[in-house]
Length: 577
Image (cartoon, rainbow, N blue to C red):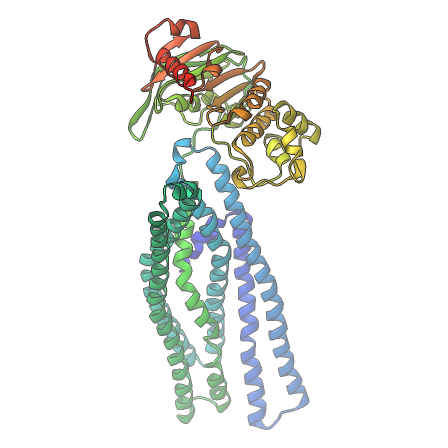
């Protein structure tokens, strides 16, 4: 128990760790105020037995009780406040810390499985730490502290009864340690079941269109229902395992209380205990373990807290990319790729590519799917680090830049656009939070999206759904371009930005891209001939290598992938019904 509490406090760190330690000090005072009931009881019993119940004695007992109740309530109030602040502040801080840490992990970490895991940690796990952990820590520590301090006071009145209480406390902890060992085996299953449920739910919701289109609702529902059933079974197993131990803990405290009563009577009858102390010990037998019972029940969740801390720490312990570079400003915006290699999961994706991209030129990258086009762009922008070779921006290795100073030089427009559940204006000014509305409107006009924004219910203040679900594909793309225009980076990477755009939107999108890319260094992955034809150089990538390189006319004069690519698209364009 102590080991888990210390781990949780260390995880909270800094001011929140200090708050929890301060709460333990408050807990000691709470226990002392609770223990004050005992001298009040003894004082009144002594007066009753001796027949000297005077107003002075009555007021004295009442005063002690008032100090106990009022003092305990005041300290409990501040203790609850400080523990809740520490718990919820830790949750908020760790969510931000995890988000900041994720910014600098290699992009290879992010896949379908990891996203479900990350979502589970930042929702279920952190909620558990912020809510459950705070209550568990508060109740378990308070229960133990109160029982120990009451027992110390009992030792002053009769050491024999004090030792009985201590023996009951040790037996209680013996049962509790057995419960903790059981919890150690089951709690990871609960956390895993919670993660699986979140992953399956996300997969079902995100893929709902495909599920309906291909009539897969039965199969997908079975997977989700299976995850729900597993979660229910795991929670039931957790309860079924803990209930006998909780009952046994309660039985230990009750039997110890009975033992206190019987022994007190025996000692009184033997003449080794005064009547006043005997009655006081019998009364105390009903209150000494009251806090410990609830502490024991909640302590079953300590192992869940332990596993939750481990899960959050597992993400924070992931090795980030080396971001300790300098805050550099490139001499120019040319890009050099020098004999780079890159593998993912032992599969070679990029194999010895060398490339020079002069500043303020357009480089188009084409080639078969899976050939390494997107990976090459990600390596240029240092989404991953190369396994071998070097990528340079303005003559400096991208690894020499701090991540933030490097990212200032790049803007991205991806095929799959993600917009945040926020206002249209805030989505556009995402890279410049303090940008005035005039600049937002200017960027939107350049991206040809001002008109459709003004047609929205609240214009630029319209809150769009998560992912931009309330907008069409073309509208999302143009907002993404407006965001990139707002950032105004010197290097633009377009990853099949026009791949899924309908003809009605294509004209506006091409105009928007022209506004974005004017006087920039442009790298574009494209499958549409009209976006490739006028590039300053065209790179054909296949199986991780550059197999062709040149301008459109040069490549059309050669037999190879590019000419087949162009011919196939011209043939497709000539089809009519």
